Image 1 (tube, helix red, strand yellow):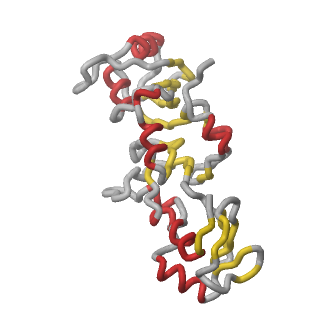
Image 2 (cartoon, rainbow, N blue to C red):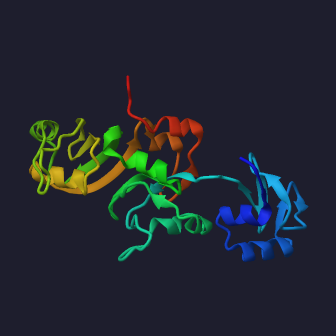
Image 3 (cartoon, rainbow, N blue to C red):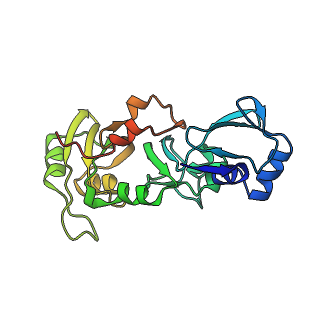
Length: 240
């Protein structure tokens, strides 16, 4: 962290161009600790910085690390085509910061979605070499049988995939529901695996990534929160 002029700080946080950020400061829209900022040239330390803009308090973040409980019928795209994009669920200035989903969930899939403007973080979380488990709860169209579970654990052959894909863990949760843990993250993988095993996916939700669970975050559908260092430490394979 270092000292930056406040117009640069506002721009870095996604509040607009430097010219617009200077105008906000000149118009008295920005304050620190209850004191209205008088000059955009004022340089402050970014570490631990909290400021108020438009009567709303914001904490400075060099990079954004966010987790969203994605509702159905939202697209994981900056240019959605048939449904609203997930970015519409976040503050508008996050779009200015080029926040992107880490991987994708289908428009009808719900649950945990990581988002960030940190390229190396996005790449690391998306890399299949890291073997980060992702946990899904799938509702099947037909009853979940022991044979279905064993087939998914043994591996199924999917079109365009050179080798069969297998669930790391798969267990029956109810008559038509199962929990499946994957490490590969292929396109429509859970749905395609269920179809290849002779069933059909009627609903799908991602409940955890690594050791971080959606339940532990207490987010309702459509809600988001910043990832804390403690959360970030859980986004790794379980080595136990």
